[in-house]
Length: 388
Image (cartoon, rainbow, N blue to C red; front, side, top):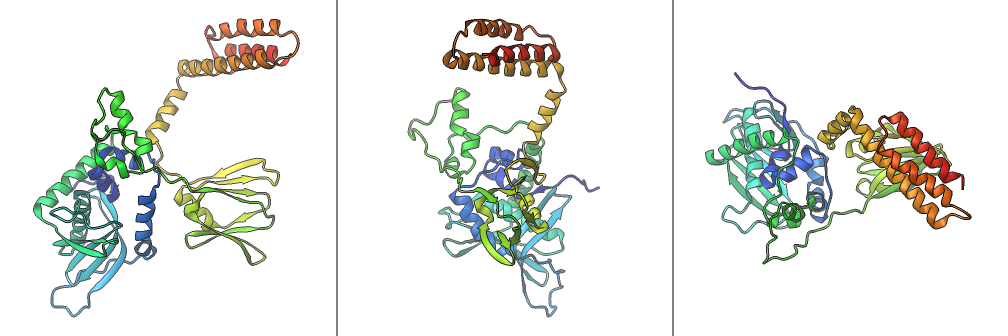
């Protein structure tokens, strides 16, 4: 009997083969940052991603059917537990060859490729086989070298791909991310290095950094995106390809690339189309709704898997009265101490009595037994502060 289970995107398996911690941060916690390499890779895939074709039926050998090139093919397998969007498939009768686009040059290795890339192609081959095709090889196209590299889909590569698929599923089921790679050169080009903090994490575990390399220099994430404020009353925000377009009275006022936008802020009587909302929600770009005077009304945001385990833990903690009291006590304590410091430095006239009252009330914060009592103590601190 075939086992039906939840599917992972093939990119999760590819990322796991590269670095298990990176896979967990991206596909379990939903954390992501761009850098020069990821932006370059997105541009390389822009052509194949712009088109979407259906995979034809495999034809018997000898049938007079011309070869076909199909772009951006979506496939999934409940048995394997993966889904994928193949860059390109070259179909010729009963045979199919997956073609994967890569941004860089051909690696100087015996296989002329890296293992994560070969595993990715092998998994695509398995998906094509489940669709009825004969798939004995795949192709990596390296854009910078403008070179095709054929990858034989061997039995040993298939075993490795299936093993990594299982490991990726097991990793996705865990709340805690794996440890960083041990002083790996992969970290230097990783866009998540600032989130992963590989060297810092290893040092905190008592492991010494690599003395030969010294301080490693990572490529910083790109933070070029900025908020898009639309304040022209009567304007309309719509979608134009991969851009957001602001128009009024059938005239284009502004066109902004989506990758340059961190959030959209609509001020007052500004309309937004459904297509623009869908695009922003898909890309994780929030749409903020404000009055003409910039009073906040609400926010429109897509639903994505972002730090799901953290959110679940927060809800569990929020349901724990003792934790809520300790958290509230620390907030009131910090707020009261800050108010007392400000009053001592900037207060006019005789502030000694108020400072003494605040100090006395602050000592009561840790002794409160419930939120209502704590609220009363907070009010006494605030009264002493604002009476001056």
